[in-house]
Length: 267
Ligand SMILES: NC(=O)c1ccc[n+]([C@@H]2O[C@H](COP(=O)([O-])OP(=O)(O)OC[C@H]3O[C@@H](n4cnc5c(N)ncnc54)[C@H](O)[C@@H]3O)[C@@H](O)[C@H]2O)c1
Image (cartoon, rainbow, N blue to C red):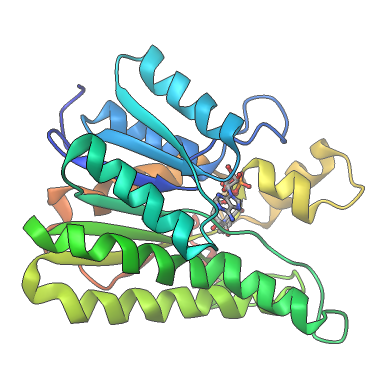
């Protein structure tokens, strides 16, 4: 499989389903990551709460000759996460890579959000990483491994969108990443995060666009990027591939911006 950067490894991708809610050709970060891992030789386990979305990713991997298994779980439910990990271990007997991709924005300032809105946003973006870490670490510790968490520029910067719950949750993901990284470094488990910037995925059109037409949303976000274009799900997946593979064997506890320079800019 390709150059086999993940040959022999088993990767579980939480939120690995292919969301088709955006314009044609726009794909989700988890789906791009699962497909990329498979192209590089990993056997992938795609976990998503949406059975059809998980199935679509698995179909893409299999059509390319890769190996993939679809599992349904809501990552905010600890029991479902434990069951999914147990099913992955039953199937493959090992786990080497854990990719945490589930997340979603929740627009609204603290004057607009209810406590329940706030808590749901933290559960989806932050509790989910706690629960998947709890379920997968015992398996990663067997022979070492890599966890990659998808965070956001919003975890370290004001991005122009009023979503304090999302920003706070992703900031929590960053520090959970570092904490896990240091606690388990001596036993060969690395934990890193990618801080995705303005990425062209279905989420953008479903959660941030409001009533605006897709072309306008795309043009505005392209213009906000230092490079003049949004990143793609593949841009994030390629960074995750590096962090998942042994090429990053001495990279640990890193928060890697994948944002075309956005986080480095003053205005
Ligand atoms: N798109 C961006 O510009 C951008 C920027 C920064 C960070 N991110 C982050 O990237 C990650 C992926 O975003 P995306 O844009 O690809 O999103 P997406 O909505 O396209 O895909 C998310 C996937 O997660 C699944 N999912 C949602 N809730 C779930 C749950 N509770 N349990 C299991 N699966 C669940 C969905 O079914 C979907 O398949 C998120 O963490 C997001 O916060 C995105």
